Image (cartoon, rainbow, N blue to C red; front, side, top):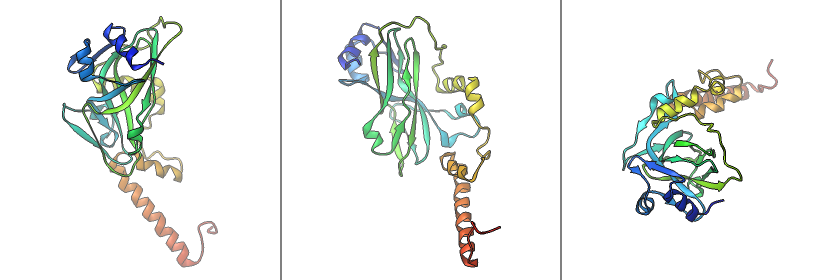
Length: 238
């Protein structure tokens, strides 16, 4: 695994090319001002676009919002957000890495999905974060949300196995959703539930479905009360 000083050196000699919405990061002054390089990792920041799952009506990429410098958004309990990283990274063929969680954010309920950072990758990163806690959490432009740990490979990767990636978050999401494998996995409706246990999944759906979930919970409680009143139980019912 690379130390932070090694990551800095690779950025300075342009082995790793980094850009942000503010421009290219190619000097020690810009690195110290904009990037967050730690002794053993590279902390990644919230960029200028985000997409909250709770605001999605039909297609995920259609509800992307801009996030200016100084701006923020709120992730409510049970909600998930995809943010575009502030850093646009071009990786060399002999370097790879993993996106890791921030312990501090985990203590307040935020959890991100760990993904690989592949050799020859070039583009903005999409960082998926879920609020598993019980209260609202605010995130703003430039906030640190996860880290990247990099390591040197024994042999460089010759082929480029990533297609050219758009710079806008909506384009990135739609390009991913165009993959045949994802098309087969995405359900067109949250109402396509196979069993009663699937009602639990409604809690993680957009806010407009949460009243349905709450109603079903209340209805279930009333049914239990009714069975108790008549002196029987659902298990004994015909």
